[in-house]
Image (cartoon, rainbow, N blue to C red; front, side, top):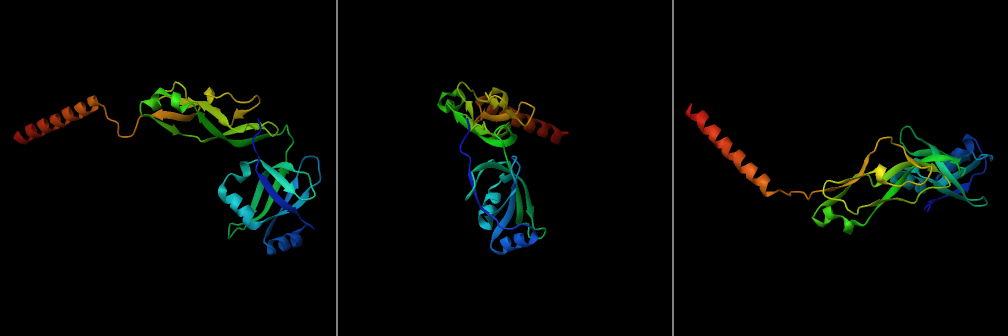
Length: 217
């Protein structure tokens, strides 16, 4: 079930402490540490531009990463903290935690929609409105779903697809308890029925009559 986990490439950092961290920053690197997993902490550093780009893309702290450090075995990690400069708001240090395969974590999983051509509502001109292109799920590090799938077969205009209609992997659950909407089939924008038009004309006539009576009084 596990999908492709993005790589996060880092270098092992020699030396610890404030002096070594300042040296790394002068060289255009962001110092960090990898901890947990019944192993000793590992001091690392990541090129500033690489980390800044990842942070700017969003959800850095809720993404599972495959950490690659030369001379070390690849390991799955999740970011626990990113320290920033209080003035410039730029990253100055990061903490990464190693994960066991049984570790429970919350991650955003993309949603895939299938059988759109089998939805009567869409055939009638309805529009698929995606409320949540991703859903945050609690799952184990060793069994992360690549995606969750919504089958649109049979959906009419105004029908909704909720999280309860999705078959999730065993041991996986949403972070939100309520049955929230993921997508719906809505009527085309600007669609007005003949009845609506007639009601509008009647309402306009009534306004004109009332206005005339008030003027005569």
